[in-house]
Image (cartoon, rainbow, N blue to C red; front, top):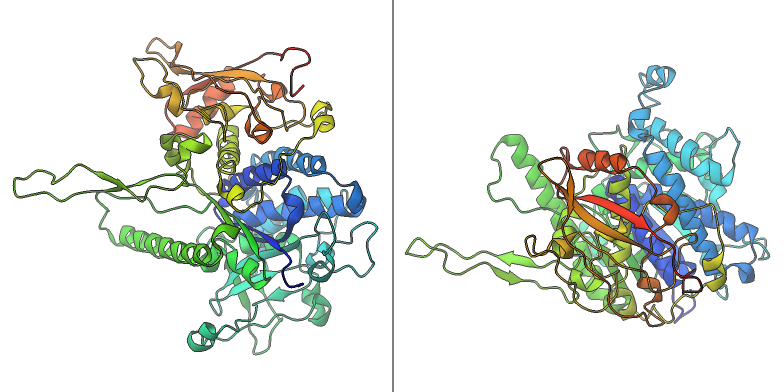
Amino acid sequence: MDAGREKWGLALSGGGFRASFFHLGVLARLAEMGLLQRVEVISTVSGGSILGALYYVHVKRLLEEKADGEITGADYLQILLRIEREFLAAVQGNMRMRTFLNPMKNIRMAFANYSRSDRIGELYDELLYRPVLAPGREASIEMRELFIHPKGDRTDFYPRDHNVGRNTKAPILILNASTLNTGHNWRFEASRMGEPPRGSRTAQEVDKNMRLRQPPSYNDITPRQQNIELGLGVAASACVPGIFAPLAISGLYDREIRVQLVDGGVHDNQGIQGLVDEKCTHFIVSDASGQMQDEMDPPAGVLSVLMRSNDILMDRVREEELFGILGTYGRRLALMHLRKGLSAEAIAWIDKDGKPAAPPKTERVPGIPCGQFGVDPRVQDRLSKIRTDLDSFTEIEASSRLLHARAIGGGRDLASMNLLRRAVTLPEFQRRETPERGMNGHEQDLFPQGGPGTAGRPRRGDQDDPGAADCLGARYEGAGRNLWPGHRRGSASLSRPTPDGGIRPVGRGDMEGAPGPRAASAFRSVPADHCRFRRARVHESSRRLRRGRPDLGDHRLQLQVRDAPAGSAGD
């Protein structure tokens, strides 16, 4: 890499489909800022790999269909709109349960060379990746087919060497898994797979396990493994221990080594090391991994203690990795995570009088409280507890994760990296009608201040329900530009069920202030066509979300969409 040249990397953490939808929201925010074109390396783990691979194949198709000078920010926004629709449809088909539905596949799982992990890899390929790159084809997409050949560029284009001078970079995709054989990180790339070198002085002193070396290319390995599929690489990266059997690769190494791969989060759940190894200078880390929750009275049973001990271990690993990367790269790193902007509590002891020595103390106050990017702390805390799984997610679960991430991405982390150099304005794209829409407009649940990045304090709701509007209720009108096609400005009100079966409003918070040029992308709007759903459907989704899952409150969202005045901004 040229000395002094910026090289941007994007890390998408593990965390099941919860992470996938969170990452989709982060990608949407980056697209609105016009930053996705700069990303040269995408390092993904588990749920981040499922979504990251889908984004990558869409970008590959775009770069091979349009020349560099023809690609605009609108193209990336269109990609994310398609992903939003396609991914939600696939997830709601419950891919994990579909691995049980084919009788012939179930019989085949009795043999050592096929498992449920192989089956879900086939489903990833069939439902997500093949329709983008090779619609109608029966054969799966192979890892070595992922090389990007940009239209109008040199025939021997190689991203590590030839991205210099391009406005839209051709990214490298790294799918991270963990090797049970050695305990090391295993990587799937378009050019090769295996365990990367560990040449640091620390590794020379500490790591004495064998390493399963990466070959130069797939063409240099045994023919039986040259055609490893993209779906299997993603399945290995998202192979959650205890839910899926390890994904096996046989005959690739000497000594009759049978490689057994599990979830990449076992080794590195943030995927940051891949960006460091690729010598990135700027880092965007989307961390949707589960963070350990406090326990007032931890259960003392054997299984409970083992599980809690594992949570402590994983939380410690996460903290040390993030401490290290933040300490090294500082302002060249933007970190978005599930509990960003929350403070912590310090509890005092019981004194000699049998009373608390002091009231609970707030400490570790973040530089940017979550209220500044438009999310109430109670909502932030509850959303961080949404389950980690690979089964079906409701629209409320999915859209709350996506919109939550877009709010967090609207904070000052990216600006502090000097990434937000100009606001993205796409007037022609904004005015163009398109059949592709976003998810239905649950966004108003999260943004009591009118959207992430807006100034001013939220206004209180009803006096008999103080803070309700600040927490979940919101009414606003999108005064800024709409960055999603087909949207119209609208309003949303929050209501709660009454004992007689009716509903009552709990308060409203009105957006204040007019947008400046950089605030345009921060204001939100309701996708009109997706707000015309039956109230019963929303209520049923709410019940499903509450039943056995984190409590998001007994709230019901009603949306009323009205046309904006003719000629107003955003039409």
